[in-house]
Image 1 (tube, rainbow over the protein chains, first blue to last red):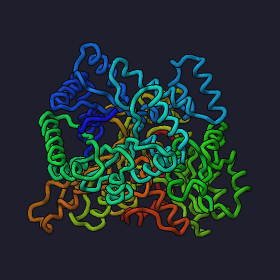
Image 2 (image 1 turned 45 degrees about the vertical axis):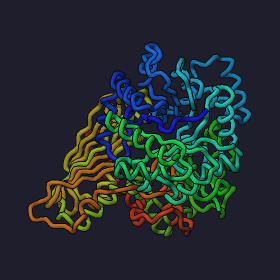
Image 3 (image 1 turned 180 degrees about the vertical axis):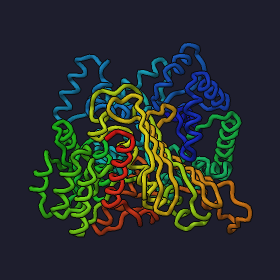
Image 4 (image 1 turned 90 degrees about the vertical axis):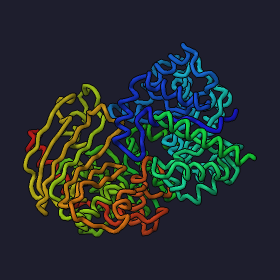
Length: 291
Length: 344
């Protein structure tokens, strides 16, 4: 299952802005209102975007209920990205790491939880991970799910810990049990390609990573990330294409759309004119490249 | 060669991941008292030890550096044991809960000539490095006064009776946020000569502060005001903001942006100078986990301890790691603020 050329992201809805903390705080407050999120999603749909890529933040529950109930946004596919780290970090601040994980499994049938705990006791944590994934995905009940992505805070952690078996089991679980496309956000694209394609042996897994003309958060270097995108070993979604607002829009988009190995572009915005303009610019560049 | 992480909680896990990416998983071991966590780390292929004693016994001369990420009350005995064995140490903030203990650790590190660092990670954030440069270069004249604020939503409701809600056990906003912001103020504006006043507010915690304000004067004569708030629900995550009045300019900054305005009439700079100062991008790192600053901090510590060069690009902040003397100075200021606010 492939993604459209433009994916709509959700940083604005949950108050993430890499270049301005003030803007982040203002957005965090503004989008407490479900209607405001629905309004912006409507602009993305109007622009022709058919993929919404989002973290599993609590504030989306009423949004998704409204979309399902009202049959809004036909053709729009949903790709949850997990885990929403702040939720777990908050719980860990108030309790222990183990208790924070277990407290999220409270609603799981006891027999399934017991089975997963037995496997964990034998050193296989994939059962617990699968339960956590299933719980997070419950929020999207009734919606068409295209992909299920691991956020970089988790994926890069597993990468650094060398937990390739766990990544492999996650990958298989998303394909076989959720019938969705697994994907991985990463801030270390070259290291991710090695782990997924060489160590695990996956065929063209989906990666989502920063690529921008300014080299913003392209680790270990812009050249290394650009080459890694171009290697052809992975399908790639480029994000932070505007370098969090620090690069001129046209130049920034052109650079990324023309870069080798970029399959899709992920961006978020809270302004209708930006959503329409950027989507149009990507599609126009794509047409030029195809012709 | 082994880098030992002492404490496998949230910070220990983060350090384990970054250290593993820098020196290789086989060269990092973890020491954790909790059986469940130890079990999980072992099954992920890490060398584990149930106690510092067991780790030191087993590793002996092979222990090249250690990162102390245990709960604050145990920083002192753990770091002391490591420093007395001449092991380069990185100790998470705050250094200890009693400045006499911090002083002892600083003395051992100095006497033995061991590199020892405190986890004041914000020294590796590009905007704060630029602030320090602006102050030391006096490009806009001397600093007249400033306000520093750290706010976030660590605590959002009534607290259970744990160490986190008890100042004497290392809990409360002053112990949690204070070390970061107090160190940044010292890093940017120099030593503090006197704390003038301090006031604590309780919102959710019974035996600790949820908000704190303090004012002080630096050795340079600069007046500073500090505000800490760990129950600000308008924040998604913790944010640090500075509002600095220089003689010739007003500068505001946070973790990611720096703005210069209200330049005094007649101030002239080179073409593009202001734009260059305000265009701050974080440096790339060899492995990114949760912010460049966490990677840069460990690249710096392990580079100094192992006499190796880590890091994708040179970073100016690496020239100024927080040493144990800095941890001691911060702990002394925390005690003074707590005393003035009636917490201790």
